[in-house]
Each structure stands twice: as structure tokens, then as C-alpha cells.
Image (cartoon, rainbow, N blue to C red; front, top):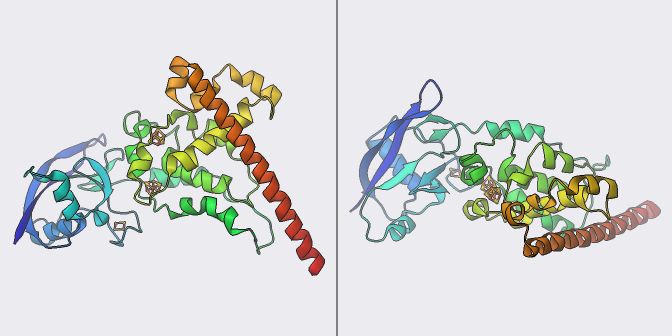
Length: 309
Ligand code: SF4
Ligand code: SF4
Ligand code: FES
């Protein structure tokens, strides 16, 4: 029978909220097909019944069992021990299991992610037609479909350096909520404008497109390419594009359109980056044209429905 040793963080916050504790080693039997969460459950059953860990579905659907396994943020229920062994190769040391490091500790592997509810509450809900029978084409739905697969595991937020290193929880909505904002902003029937909040309250300019959030997303959402960059483009169009809004654009250009795409834009402002920003604006203009086309198709469909009633 194979054995496995886990080194698990055991601790709690002190009076100031800082985590205090230690790494404790547990060795248990390893059965074929086990995932990391199975090993944690075996440790709870055989060695440490007071080890705190959050989980619910054991199927990668509830987003509860987020932790850092060998330094990488992952869902414990979806992380196979076979893969961990392969990653570790010849290294025989224990598997390192810690709670998410960006969120306040509750106990052991459990963190307090209630910040997410606060941010969620600040986002304006969908504002579509009053008629409950919403109709739109599948190709209009396709664009936002991937955002709906978010399981709110917060692994992306835990990984983002804006949160992890700079603790901008009050000024930056974090990748998970830009995914939510994108799903609303790109909804074919939504009429709300959240761009001012995305720029000022949710601080999208802090994101410098490092893509770390995308790399850890267990739902495979292309957070950076499909949510963050299009939202940045919309902010640029609304505030910096002289063709769309001449007065606002002239006033804002001095404050740095390029900062919406990368820190490097601000630091070097090289011609290559300028070209990239122009390309982004062109892409957004094409998107606006496409949206107008879809809008007129929708209007035409509504007229036809009206005529046939
Ligand atoms: S791409 Fe933006 S949101 Fe994602 S990890 Fe990097 S800075 Fe954070
Ligand atoms: S976007 Fe991905 S990583 Fe972020 S909370 Fe949703 S599922 Fe988790
Ligand atoms: S227990 Fe639900 S995602 Fe892991």
C-alpha cells in the first residue's frame, strides 16, 4: 500500500487578524484514484478530526475547496494525487497544503471570502426589457456563456498580484468580478452602463494583463482575453476616443489612456505599445458596429413578432 505525507497548515488568526500557526505533517494510506481532498478527509478521519477545511460538491462545481497545493492555487477536489506525484517527480518531501494566502484566515485551510459578497452587491444588476419573454440568438449568447461557468472559487482573486501583494481589496474588483461585469456588459439585452464604475470604483486600470488569473481558473474561463481586455477597451472608447466623445477624450488623454493596457505603457510609452492601443480601439469600433447590426436585427425581429400578433 502506498503512503503519502501531507504538510498541512494548522492555525488561526491572532488578535490583529494575522495568521499564526505551524505546518504539521500527516502520513496516511494512498489509494488509487484519490484526489487531494480525499487525502485531507482521510487525515481528518484518522489523525486530526479538528482539521478545518471547506468543501461541498467534490465535483469542481461549488468552488468551496480552494487551497494552495505545493504553492499553486487549485481546487482540492479536482487535483489528482497522480498528477501531484508526477509534478513532484523524484522529490520525496511532503505535499504542501495551505489556505489561500490573499484572504483573511478563519482556521487551518478555511479563509474568509465574504469580501466577494460586498463587491457583488455594488454591481448594478441586469437591466433588460420588461417583457419577461426575452429572445436573442444563440450566437449573441455564446459570447457570455463562458462567464456563466464561474464557480466563484476565488482562486483568480487569490492569485492576482493587485490583491495578493498590494491588497487593493477596496479599490479593485478583482478578476472574478470583472468576469461578472463582462457577462452583464456584453449581455445582448442589457441596457445599463457600468463603464464609469468599472473605471473609477472597480479600478480596472490596476490590472496590467499579466494573465495569472486565467492560468489558475479551474473553469477554463479566458478571464484576461475575453473579460478584462474588452472591458478595458470599452473604458478607453468611452473616455479617451475623440471620435466617440471628443470633449471627454481631450480632457482625459493627459491622464494616460495607455495605463489601461499595461504598466509598461506608462513607463515606456513606446511606439509598439501605442500601436497596440490603436489596434484595441479599432477592435472596439468593430465591436460597436457588430452590436449596432445585432440591435437592428433584434428590432426587426420584434417588429415581425408585433406584425404577426
Ligand atoms: S490579468 Fe489583471 S486581474 Fe488577472 S492576475 Fe493579472 S493583474 Fe490580476
Ligand atoms: S473566474 Fe475562474 S478562478 Fe475566478 S472565481 Fe470564477 S471560476 Fe474561480
Ligand atoms: S468541493 Fe466543490 S469545488 Fe471542490
